[in-house]
Picture 1 (spheres, helix red, strand yellow):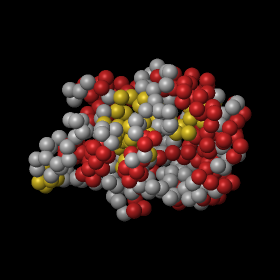
Picture 2: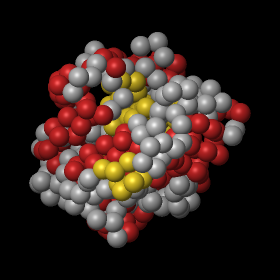
Picture 3: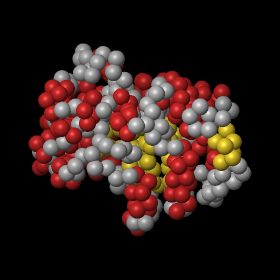
Picture 4: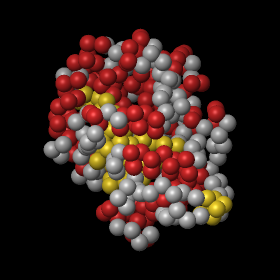
Length: 355
C-alpha cells in the first residue's frame, strides 16, 4: 500500500483547468485553512509543467511522479505520449501516466467536443501505445478521433520501459479497456469494497482475453481520507460545506442508497458531467444541505487513524494494493481542528505502509 503524499512511494497531481469545487462556496467561511493556501480555487497549475519543476527538486528525487489523471479528450494523445515520455526520461524512469475520459467541465466550456468520451478514450490510449511501440518508424493508423498519417515518435523509452499507464475507470466498457491496455487501475468514484472486487474481476477477465497477465495490473484506488483526534472532529469535517460538496461528484445511484435523490437529477452520472462553476452560492448550499452523513462515510475513508486503517484493510482484502490518498482532513472549516488533524493523518500514512 502507498500514498500520494509525503512519506509514500509516489506524488500525484491532478489535470484540470478549473476546480471540481464550486467557486461560489470556496470562501474563507467554508474553506478554513484552505482559503489561505488556495485563495483562488480555480487557479490551477498545468500538471506536466509542475511535475517537471518538482522533478528538479531534491526532496522529490526518490518519488515516482504521476498525473492523476490526465484527460484523454482535451489533450491530443500524441502530446500526452510526448509529455509522459519526456518526464520519464528526465526523471530516469519515475513517470506514471494516469489517464481517463476526463470531465465535461474541462472540455465543453473550452470548445472541446464532449460526445462519446469512452470511445475517444479507447482510441487515445491505443494511439499512445501505437506511438510508443513504433520504434521511431512512421505510423499510420485509422481512427475516428485521432488518426495518424505518417506520424513519427522517436523519443526512446527509459532503459527499455515506457511510463506505466494507470487507468481511471468504472463502467463495464472502461474496465474492459483497462484489462487490454492498462498497467494499473485507479478508480475514483467506486465507493464500496464489494463493487471494487467485482470490477477488478472484470479487469482480470479482460486481461486474460487479451493474452495479458492479470496479476501484472496494479489494483489501485484514489480516495479521500478524513481523520482527526476523535470521532466528533471527524464528523465535523465530514459535515463541512466544502467537504460535502465533494458528494456532488458521486453518481445518483450512490445517493439513492442513502434515501436521497441527487440534486442534479435521479440519473446524474456524477463527476463526468459536473460543471461546478455554474453552481451559484444559493444552489451549492442547498445541494450540500441535502447530503447525509452516511453518504459522506461511504465515499471516503473516515474516523480515527485506527478506524481508517481498518476500513482500508477491508479494501485490501478485496484486492486493493496501492492507495492514492487525498487529505480531506484539511477541509475542516475550523483552522485549529484542520491543523490538529495533521498528526492523526501522519499516523494513517505510517499505518498504510504496514498493511
